[in-house]
Image (cartoon, rainbow over all chains, first blue to last red):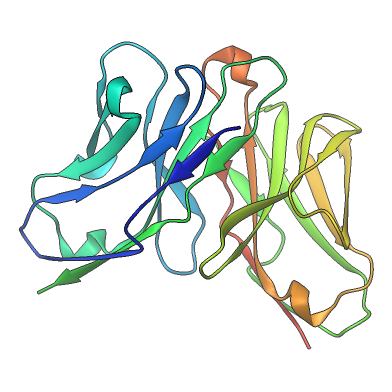
Length: 115
Length: 115
């Protein structure tokens, strides 16, 4: 069965510092991978996705993520965070098989930004 | 841009009431989903629909039903609301996994309070 682990429930970084949010998945083959962001009281917005090809994926808002098959990881990075990046971030994994259209979400990492 | 709308941002109901949450998407997506989101528990799938009049139970279907009479509309029904159904409800839509583009697009959420 698929599963997603986000080991950090909360992360605090200073504005302007670099960021890395960890995500590990369990899946028998190469999955589809996603990162979403949720601002307070809002729905989820897609930051980036990996389906195939280049394992370094660029997303919106200056985020990127790298798929590492050997480590079953898809960590999210940003070189310099802004106060507006404070939000909750969800990693998700989906299957490539027919009729398995569901996505499994991690429990999220809440990002706090220090001024 | 894909747009997913939900009928209400905030809803207050009384125990025992029948509650309808409506979701509409405008991108002709085959799949539609209902999740509930609670602190510390992440997103939990309630029901999933992959076609008109087709539905599958998710992880926590008890106490809920759904209806999909038209492709663009997916309704979540609480037959007799209870206080433990107080939560944030999120609707999403997507293409099938076989399209290679099955990222989910989310609505803004409905914050339901059952008194």
